[in-house]
Length: 388
Image (cartoon, rainbow, N blue to C red; front, side, top):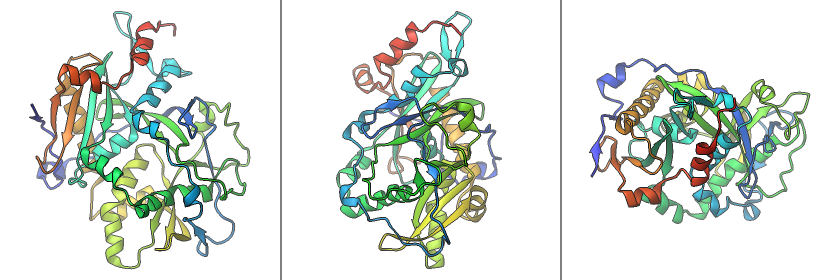
């Protein structure tokens, strides 16, 4: 049976309009890992890339985003079954357990965090007040005092993926191809754009922040860093070195030709860009402007503050982040003291059913099938000894 929660995403509600920006601490980088094309976990920064812009003017370019589409390598199908396994791998293999774990009064180990999830889930929740027609499902379990969140694909999303057209796949590919043009494995080196684009490869950073009193540990795929004169040893990179680097976000979009297109960009796109970058403290977005044929003619820089300023008539960062904070509080309230890795709470939002979030506790048999904390993780936690 579904129960309606107290979380209402309507941005027009007077109480939501008047709320100040919630208290959010600056995201703190606490670790990283890499994934190769086969999605094999690697605790190093081997997949870290450097921003290497084309020489000369950035307003007279011809970067063909269609190049190599026929030979690119999509993510392996196994990626759809990962859930939050890569985050759990990081927790299990963390080189600095003191930054993640603490000991309770009873001598048991527990994470210092109230929540563990991916940045993408936080971004999705935050944008709900304005993406109110987009349904979502988030599953939650509380284990050892920490709530783990995992997005579950909706029926609509699965159907959309099954029916994806060649053109839609090409548009998705454009972003990865643009990254290949301006992100390199060595600083200031020439990109090899003849190699197949490998969509399964990722460099992921782990961040720690506090959202309205809730301490959250989350992973985020990071595009690249600004290159320095001294290359980093990516296989032996230390956390302190990466903390000194400047991350950048890489985007590609169609160049607008009318004011209506500009307005639509700020109304529908920038809130996602802003939330995504804000959650990892990225201040600079490098954006390729393409034409209808998929050719990037110009590269521009966009600053996070400028995005926020220019989008002010269309959406509010305060409303986005307050809704995220309210959702986390509602999950805490709903789960209460339950502490069982097999008891799954499912939160659903679908504007066709209600303009509010609903939840249900999955029946025991369904909960066991849907439980996303694997035995190898819970077994590891149970056997851990507080040696630090």
